[in-house]
Length: 92
Image 1 (spheres, rainbow, N blue to C red):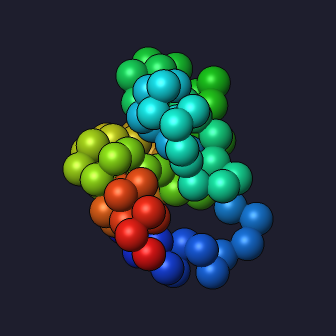
Image 2 (cartoon, one colour):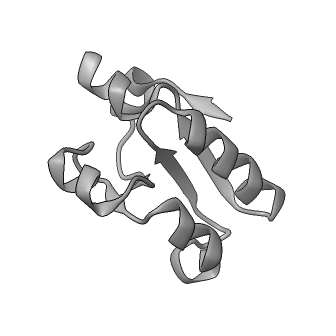
């Protein structure tokens, strides 16, 4: 599952997770997002995600987030990849 950055920015009260490392997050991120590296998210999923909520994930270009979303969704979580990642946010 994917969503465009334009469609995402029209949504209210959503959970956005930046799965990049802390350094990249600190250099810039989508407003309102929290930073949980993909490694941490995959190894401690139940600590960060609730199966009753939907989460929007992004990385630099959308490739890693697509893979992580597929893996999380196969485990019963509701996650959506932001198409094009942070790069598309910068280009909008």
